[in-house]
Each structure stands twice: as structure tokens, then as C-alpha cells.
Amino acid sequence: RPSTMMEPLERQQMEFDMYGFLDGGQSSNQTEECDYRSHDYVSEEDEAAKLEVWKVVLKTWDTVMMEQPSKIARMIRTGVPNPVRGQVWMKLVGTETAKRSVKLHYKKEVTALAKLCKKRERQEAAADAQNVEWAIAYGKLDAGGPARPADAVKDDLLPAVAAVRQIKLDLDRTFYTHITFMDAGGEGQQELFRVLAIYAKANPKVGYCQGMAYVAAVLLMHLAEEDAFWTLYCLMESPKYFQDFYSETLERVQKEANVFAGLIARRLPAVAMHMAEMSVHPLMYVTQWFMTGFTSLPLWDTVLCIWDAF
Image (tube, rainbow, N blue to C red; front, side, top):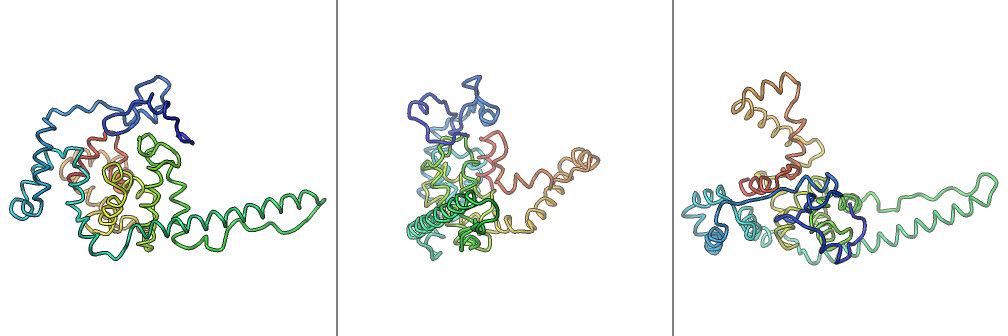
């Protein structure tokens, strides 16, 4: 993936699909990694008319949900227009309710996180300087020499610090062909870092797991940073969604994989029988699907339909 910020001209020469992914088919020099998201997405529906209907529903959401919940279910099955998709997700998971009820001030947490990162930078710079001094002193001696300084600093094992270190490692691996996250150190990556790090601090029992980065990134494709955080919070804390998916034992994932196996046996018995003969248990392939919210699937319109529905 690109390791530096792109020049404006270089960015202008790139082509992206309607969902913001780099169009790998624009040049024969593009790698397969850039190609797997690139498809022609053609909608047969009148998106403009559908969008207007959704705007009306969003304005009267509580009333419609109370009086005609089946109407929203039908509308979701026919497709949510991309311009209002984030707003619909917020309504479905109860983002605004979480904002009001959870004692967490996002902007204050952003400030605290920035201070933590500055402190870590100073500590790591001091540790690096000590290692350089040791190497110089060691090189002047024929044998032996002073003990090598420790690489770790005193707060390395704190949950919040450990999460921050891992999140930083994963930023460049997360949707690096998407226009929002392709610039190393760019605003998109910074927003993703803050959302994940603040959630890890808010729920130290769960902390951070790599699959969360993909879930948070999808939210940031459709929502402002703070809205994306609170929507992630709702998803991670609700038993309807991702609660317990990221535990150390992955017990929830195993249970859901068994449910999935039962559905396959019921709906597609021939497939289930074939997979059993090949000794392939669903856990072997659904773990990635479940823990990344199906974002590993290649067709992005399919991914978004799954998100709309669940």
C-alpha cells in the first residue's frame, strides 16, 4: 500500500468506483489487491425517488417505527440509498440514545488520547536515544560492555497503551484501496485511530481486536467521526450485534458458526453434506466474515445490503 501522502495530481489521476474503492481496472499496472473491489455497480431502481422517500421516513422515524415497522423492513429489503445509509444505521442501532445515556465525552477523550500519544512519543524517543548511546559505547569496546537498555517503557503493558500500539500497526492494513484510508497518516486513518482507541479505553475488557478496524472503517465511510464512534459503541455493546464476538475465547463466534452450520444443513443440505465429506466446518471460513462484519466479501454492494439488513 502507499506509505506516504499522495500528491494532489497523483490522486486526481486515480479512478474510484461509486463506493470509494480504487478502480484496479484503470491500468494494467494495477495489482490484483487493487482489483478485487472493482466492479461495475448498476442499480435498476430510481435512486432519486427512493432517496426522497427515505428522507421523509427519517424525519418521522419514531412515528413510522411505532405505527408501521414493517414498512421500514420492506424498504430496507429493497435497498437503502447510499447518501442516507449512515443515518439509517444510526436510527437502527440507537446511536443518539447512547450519546445521551453513556457517560463519555468524545471530544474530551480525543484530547486525552492526543496527550497519551505525545507522552508515548517522548518515551519512545528517549528509549531509542538510550539504545543508540549503548550501541556507540558497545562498539568502542573489544568485548563485553554495558547492559543493553530495555526496549519497553514502563507503561507498555497498560491496556490503553497496548491497544494504541496495535491499532497503529493495523491502520495501513485496513481498506488501503479506499479513498478515505489510502493516505498513510491522512485524516481518514487518524479518524479511524481515534475511534478505535477511544472505544478500547471505554471498554478495557474488550479493548481492541483487528476485526474491529474494518467495522469502524465502514462506519467512517458513511458517518462523521463522532457519530461513527457512537454507532460502533452501540454495535459492540449490543447482544444483537457484536457483543462478545471479540472475547479471548471467541465463544460467541463459535456459537454463531454452529447456528450457521444448522442453517446450511436446513437450507442447502447438499452443500452441507459435501462440506462434511470434505471435513470443512463453517468455523473455518465464517470467522473472518463474522469478525469483520462480512467486509471481506468482494462485492461491496452485497456487503452494504448485509449491513442494512442486520
